[in-house]
Image (cartoon, rainbow, N blue to C red; front, side):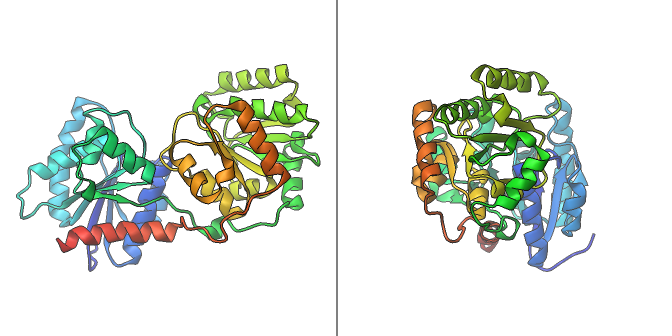
Length: 374
């Protein structure tokens, strides 16, 4: 294995398939290599493995996310890896890998033991199993919402060990676009004819699960069209394999409301920045509080207002950056009123995006350096 000056950081996660945890892992591996450090990742692998390896990081394939007693055999393998690699930092991003990593570290001599970092990426149900994520010598919280959650549910946690490092985006991937962007709307309408029209386009990106609030968006569309507004709604990502029954329920609800012809439920789009540009209003209606709210900052970066329930990381971002878009959770009348107001007069949006990928990478590497100095 090649050696490089600086730190050796080992990140632990279940797999490299998809999702925010995987994306953050790759982004930090890239920052480490660029800064002259050595980045190792332990996981079961997956379709994002080539993207990780393209950063110059190394990968060790161990299925440390499988919930089985047999997974305990990886504790010894991790301990050997930490020792052989000369790891300075072990950074766990998920609960089972964190337990395995923590056990492996306990079996090492204190003088040779790497420092232990965890990142709390989500608002997991409080339990002894989840408590491992608060045991890091430094606990990275992806929002103030997460920090408050950790301290509320694990009050024995030393607040001095917590570091808030918000997720971030690359503004170049979400460039500011003129509003309205008629060319983007025309391209989207050419792909999805139900979205054609002169009225406002609402966008709710997200997986096909009830937690994403698709039914709330359909009800909002119904309320706006009842006002005589030729609103349209696009829900990219809701139509996916295994979610056929859920999509059928949404389509039936739209038909009952008489808005089926103004609704497009589609698979995920590879051009999400183009989708934001085509939209007049972006919705974030997750019924379960989220740890952060990447959709919010992506939409703001493109220059589109966001409407969402005022809870979790989404509410935190909206209250800070665009308060008019934060609505008391699950109040459909208030949601419709806020949508009407935002469509009638677009709010002022941040001139520059404070939540950037570069800032997240720098802050995470600063956490590593803080421990290394100790």
